Image (tube, rainbow, N blue to C red; front, side):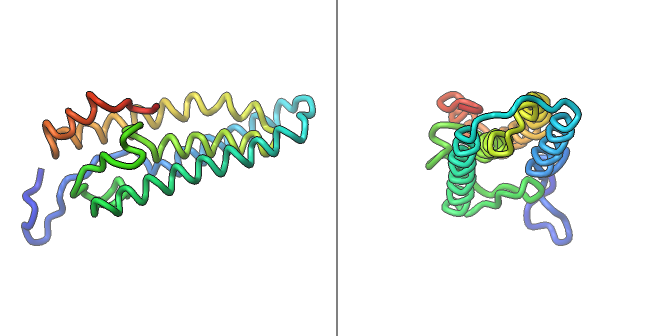
Length: 160
């Protein structure tokens, strides 16, 4: 880890494999491709309305995650160093409310688009998020915040 404050040197970051929104959007695109290859039966219009509600819930969760980061004065961008540990707001219930919000939004989009086969692709998307993003962030946060972070992990679930 680079010393904070050394001129011209950046502090360590989590080293995630790709921006999480890009990962979810990429897999959603694959899901829509799968839907195009294997079109299914028509779903009721109510599914689209349910999808819209689920999208709103996912976006609300993502916004609450951003607000929690702003409150503690740290950046949500995983390519920038963390300066504080968020443990309030949605972080009382999930250590990853932003990624949970993205996954919920993904489900909502698939439902609103009447693309149930796209939901199958959410499984590999969450595996990539788990191992390529979350696992790296967890190691980073443990190095950075030590026992404070470990205490948070003992009292808060990773997803829900």
